[in-house]
Image (cartoon, rainbow, N blue to C red; front, side):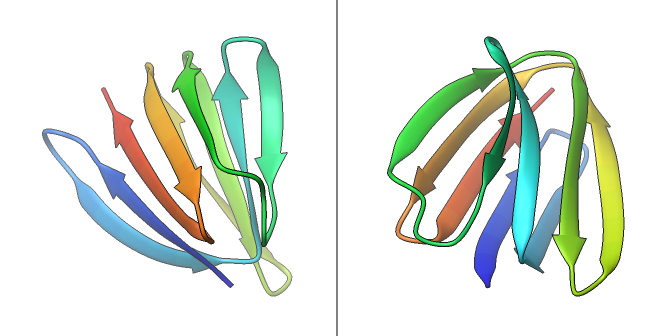
Length: 77
């Protein structure tokens, strides 16, 4: 599992996911377990993730994501 913390001025959410997709500035990208460390800006779009066979999502206007050691921190507008 991948630990994800999503932070915004209005919401704080913790998730444990199998995979997660982000709307990066160069296009959508997926993060799986043991992904290489990365910091990326996010554009307006949808963050969506899978847990088991279930999918869920969250609309964002932009932000930044940091991935390191199966922990993801996301700051969104």
